[in-house]
Each structure stands twice: as C-alpha cells, then as structure tokens.
Image 1: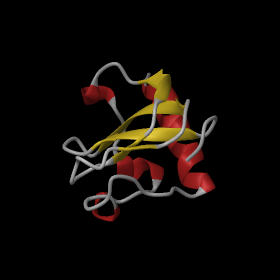
Image 2: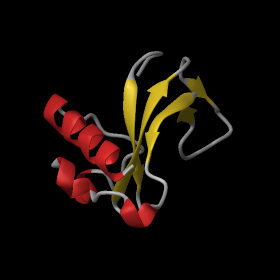
Image 3: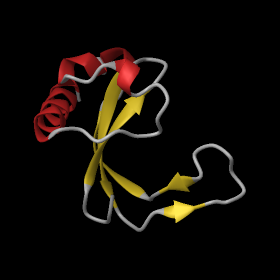
Image 4: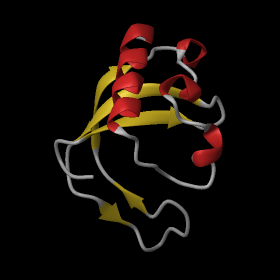
Length: 91
C-alpha cells in the first residue's frame, strides 16, 4: 500500500466490512510490537455508522477463513468494487 491507495476496513468479530479509506502516508514499522507491527495512516472516505448495518464480508466474495490469520489480504478488483458498493449502500 502507498499514499493514494484505497483500502476496505474489516471488523473481524462481526465478520463485516464497514469502511472505505484512503492511505495518506508511508507504512510505519514499530519493532516493539510483536503483533501488527506495521501500520499506515488513513483517511476515511465512506464509513458505515453502525456495525449492525455493515455488510457481511462474504457479500463481497471474501470468506472470513481467508482473513483469520492475516492483518490484511489483497482483494481482486471485482471484490474491491463490490465491497465499495456494499459499504456505500449501507452508509
């Protein structure tokens, strides 16, 4: 990911997608952290106001099993477009 790219936010416990964000800076590494040591600054583009209204990740063609052990995954263009549409509709 680099500045200007867009990403989808995923609520793991809910297994739902709830936001479209824009990456606003370079990745940052915190060597003090054992888990999730990499992060990057983001700016919200579209957010679902209530997780009860957030679409399930499966609706975008992504199965929770593919995400469970990862901090992020790469979506296909079709999955990303579907996720954006679903989030915009729910927002």
